[in-house]
Amino acid sequence: MRKTKTLILVAVLCAGLSVPSICSGYSFNLWGSMTGAKTLALNPFLYGAIGPFDATLDLVAGYGVSDRLDVYADLAGLYYDGFGALSYSGSWVMPRFDLGANNILALSVGESFDSSTGAASFYLWPQYHFFWENDKFALEFNGGVNIPLDAPETSSALLFFAPVYKILDGTFHVFCEIDPSYIASGVDKGFDLTLLPGFWFGFGEEALHQFSIGVSVGGWWNDGKLNGRPSYTWNIWYWTTFSLGGE
Figure 1 (cartoon, rainbow, N blue to C red):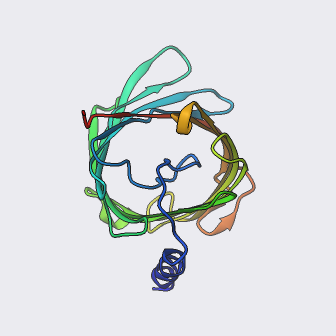
Figure 2: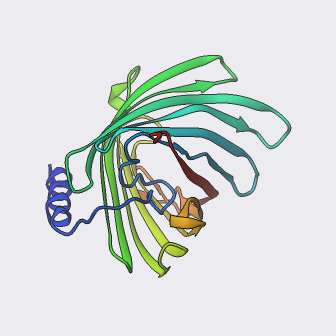
């Protein structure tokens, strides 16, 4: 209940400050403002562990049905294990609706695939997205509950928060994600915290080509206790858009 009240308070306070934006989000994990009507977005994600090396490529694309409705999908997640094997890891689709002033409701429906066993599992992830910016700062907030359909008792609550400072507006920004989560039960039960500092780069007219690059540090916590053994991940995404509106 306390988390719910906090989320609502953040939404109410920020709604009064929000301004329209034509840009995507800046940090790595957070979704930003709407894509725009009749606009196709290409947004592949590439990330993996640091020592030992592996990599996952998510082939993400989105389409703006209208100014207040867009749909994103991971067409295929591809996992490279670092030893020469490439496998399919899953897909998802996520429609989003803007309630106004960049207060956005989203629902991700996804599949995770275990190539070693050939088993697929499915999940629902209702989410709230918020995005605000001016010429010096940006604020990004996402929150939601990931619900595995085969084991809903292991659902996890996830928050993603990222302040952004624009060193060169539209060209070079710095951010720091603060991503707490809580898993209700199972072997990973408990609180976890990931920090992901990074950089955003925009190139071309109106930052047509965008990159977000960062290193995440997570896994400090287990069952509510500090375990002192964090894991490290490198992260990068690319973003560009194409207008399909015609003349």
